[in-house]
Length: 220
Image (cartoon, rainbow, N blue to C red; front, side, top):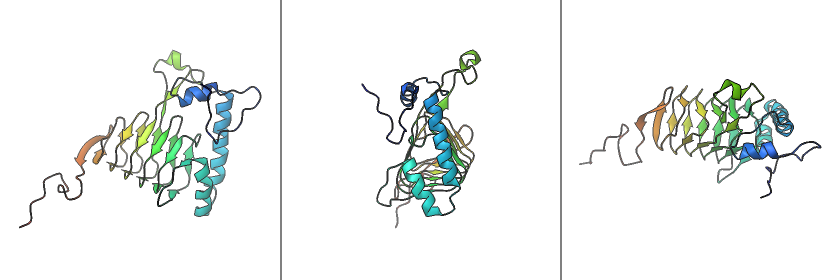
């Protein structure tokens, strides 16, 4: 099967090929030092450097939307405070009415997908890459690495300074306390805090239970 690169990826230059990009997007080990991947990262840095310096909010959002994968929706809005950092852009997929606080970092080696109406606090970090545990295999920047996707549901509230690791799926309606480190999947409608993040509360469906999970008393 012929590999099709992301629509926003630039054409190959002489001496470049798509092999490492294809491996990266498939979640296979790949070499980050590949010339084409390096050019993609430089392109991302230069693009975001200009966008982050744009003072007008409307102009900044208009420039960010084609760089990222903004899926849109009825509200048709995304809010991202500056500065914002990612590597490739095409691996960041945002739903409708997503909000980022300042200084968020998304290492989007694998897909980072965020659902509708999700709010993300300042200094939140999404880390998809992984490296070998063996120092000999890791070999500085010469060894292969890989990445696992991060999926965030809709109506999630992520507090400031949260770290979310690759391979994690966060369900809908979750609240993640500030400073938490999320290392495994989080089920929908829960509150998690800590390092590693753990469930401390479940959020009932409207009208089903009280705020702490107890059944609501019947009205007399």
